[in-house]
Image 1 (tube, rainbow, N blue to C red):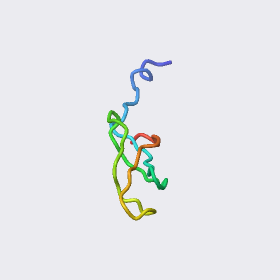
Image 2 (tube, one colour):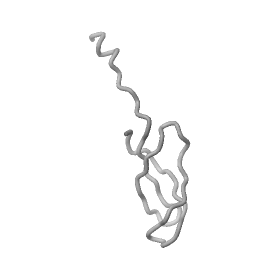
Image 3 (cartoon, rainbow, N blue to C red):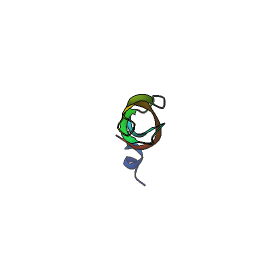
Amino acid sequence: MFLTNILMKKAKSKSIMVLMESAITGHKFVWIRERLADKLEIIRFDPYLGQNSLYRERRRIRSM
């Protein structure tokens, strides 16, 4: 193994893409947040319900 392969590690990105899911209806959408931030909980319009509802972060999809 060459020394250049060891020194050229890939840097981590600052943001990640996460899947947000409604606590009431299960409606899902994708959101981007910073890697070091806490898990997200936001209030947003739910099209299935027709009013605002709580969305929680379910899982990480990929890094940006």
